[in-house]
Length: 334
Image (cartoon, rainbow, N blue to C red; front, side, top):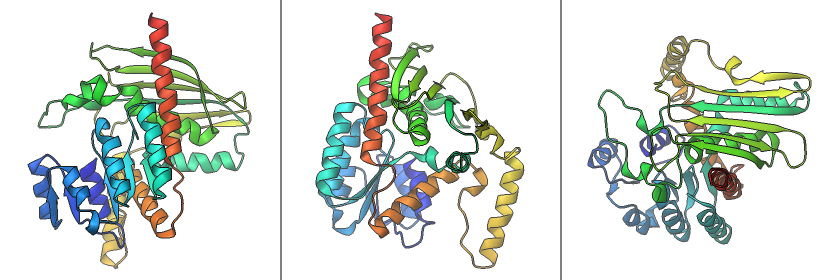
């Protein structure tokens, strides 16, 4: 994700990537080849050189979020951090305190809010096209950290370490879907949760969570898993909104043929480049474009000095539901 964010920055007006930190020599060589001048193997060294920085994009393992966010904020930087904002409620509350004390722009990478299909669904709901929402179904079943490309790599050690990761598929993927429930409905409270461990790792690889709205009859059913072997462009993700006047499904809003869509978008970008217009990076992937859009929005918030719609409070509220889900499931197993 760090590499993807870096590449997206190259396609955002008036943004210059001046420093990169990574433990991977291969990743740092890529950054150097792209013209990044300041290279570090430790993010602490990068943040200590903050006199050349205005903002930091943090895409580190979960257990390093609190430390890196604190360093960046205390250095006076605006901060974008990958989800989950923190690995537990305690760290999330500390981050909220640090953000409020700093007064800096702070945004969490809740990228699903910027997915084209989700944006269209949100506008449709706001227009009242399906009436009052009674139920939301949110699903994402993938292979997660176990997915492998042509050159298989070992799963990062921290991903399977409950203390370092903070959780498994619910904290990783369920985080997005719980946030989407809050995006469409507002606040949510836990009704039920069930975790499963098909691979016998310390982290859960399947989770089902039921939420409800504290102010209405709306319910949300969230289903996430790491147990299915899928590879892009196949993407087992959907959001279904059931209203008292109709329904909307994200599956009706995504391109029917992602290969044909990619060809069309590639041609559009080629044409834009030929006539001197700005291209839309990653638009051909459809799903990955949301990562570019969220960073554009983050930098726009900095330019306009406004609070991002995805705040530290949003990150904390989502983590609270997840931690409560873990505790609920443990009680059921006892």
